[in-house]
Length: 121
Image (cartoon, rainbow, N blue to C red; front, side):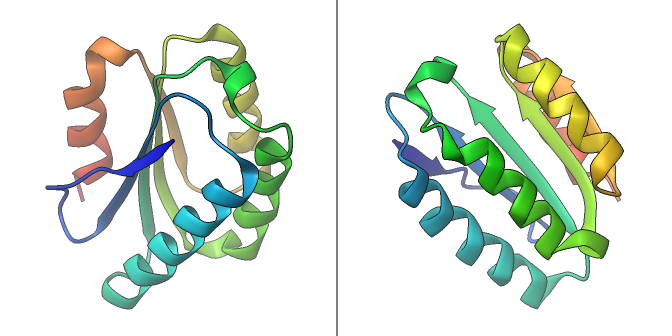
């Protein structure tokens, strides 16, 4: 299940994942969110909070992330991944070599710090 993170600055978008997340649900939430953000801002600042086990994520989501990353290739500014899952952190580290922008990983107990970092201009 995905939920928008509310109360973020207008130049930041965020999703909170918990329970089971289907690939179509992720794409249906993420693409409009990014498109709306780009109407207000020239760059993408994004925070993803994963409070679900990676096995609850559909297998195609990570490949879809790469496609989305390439679709908006020059638009990425900052991406914060918030999770306690080491496997996710290792995988998300790959993105910093494939897509321009700044990436940072945060633990769940650092969510406020992650939002401050991704929100800073």
